[in-house]
Image 1 (cartoon, rainbow, N blue to C red):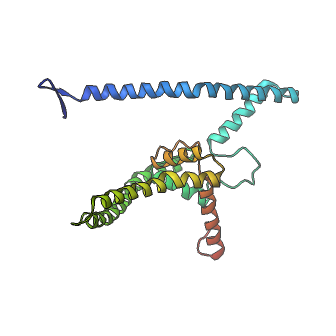
Image 2 (cartoon, rainbow, N blue to C red):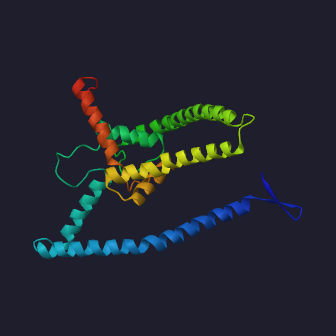
Image 3 (tube, rainbow, N blue to C red):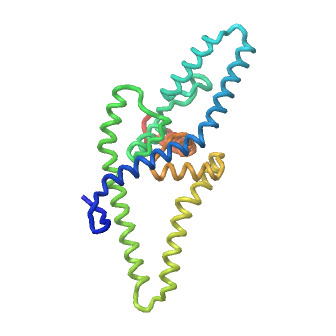
Length: 242
């Protein structure tokens, strides 16, 4: 167990770590409450006003009937059914959406916009994740080893005798810049353009996805659309059976 030395005395890190962890959670709870509670109350008031307007326009309905209908909509939404449109809407569990969901499972992103509702589907999801998450980690580990080999070769080239310190510094700065552009600058720009989001929303989505937090409040529908179009091409070409 690691210890902290203070005045020639060894103290355990356990208690400070636990207290620091709890403090961090309490601080986060306080800040999120201050930032989000007022906006939530405003949205709730607007929704209540819309319900009152609806009742005033359609006097044949009473409040209880409206609340029951809202409950039906909420239950449909929780089960992944889009209440808009009619029964001809595309299925949430066609191949493209299922493929996208499988990717969110093995990468532990788990957006939450789609989840199995049947017992067999939930049981399969557990075992699929049980083997899929380690497989994904092994794939990323192998990919990291390959990148490390190339970086080590580059490092040996940079640190050859006679290479100026300026070249080494510029090389490191170049890779930091390229990494920042590839992961934190270009993706938000692309998502904001394609999905119609602001740059801040695109940056938020990119970070939440890369960190595998995956709240699910923003989901890139264009990716699902591309997969769907690919499956349509496969079906038409006979390479994939519907």
